[in-house]
Image 1 (cartoon, helix red, strand yellow):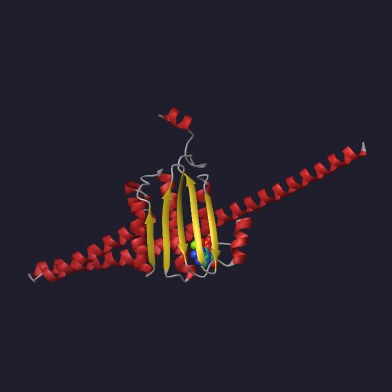
Image 2 (cartoon, rainbow, N blue to C red):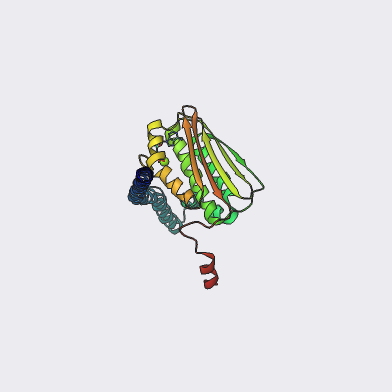
Length: 266
Ligand SMILES: Nc1ncnc2c1ncn2[C@@H]1O[C@H](COP(=O)(O)OP(=O)(O)O)[C@@H](O)[C@H]1O
Ligand SMILES: [Mg+2]
């Protein structure tokens, strides 16, 4: 029966077509992930180098100055000179070193995030960001949200950091709005700026293949998808909006043990 044979043939061609498209998509995604991990390793190296330099240049210098002051205190004490002025300077240097370390360690992993949750850490971060960058950031935090799973809070915090850093580096906007909302099922974080937007070619390439950008956008998307969430990016000549939505209750894919495994351990 030639007609049936013909239809079957068409179906087969269709299926083959879809199959090829799927394979192509999978290959694209695998390549994007492979290139992301390579770039992440590079960024990790760069970050370590920057940290080492920061530690050496700021905290190291302050501690060296502190040692000199202590030596000078010793001299003065021995020769019976007044120490009150040197003493005050020494104290100020110790304060400076503490402040340097606090800022660096807070930026690496804010203790507030773990202790008090996303909203407190976001308030602290945004305040510091606004001071450092001279950019106004309006925070709209739904006060009913309460605590989320720690790993979700950490992922959202990284999205906030990266989006604000991106807006500072790339957008030319002097203003941003940060919104956190939630219902029983989903929590949603939005970071919006009013700058020049992500170049359309770059954004399209990123949306289609996950490539073409730095690790910032890819990393945010991976983090959010790890929680079965979605990262949506809308951008044009009036600005950029990054929206991360994550289900509140589902365990993430890669790190959290399954319930049964947890029960077995307990
Ligand atoms: N808020 C923004 N406004 C304008 N352009 C942006 C914004 N965020 C990202 N971009 C563009 O997208 C690119 C990729 O961002 P990202 O993946 O974070 O990498 P990186 O910040 O390291 O360049 C940036 O280089 C920039 O061109
Ligand atoms: Mg970036």
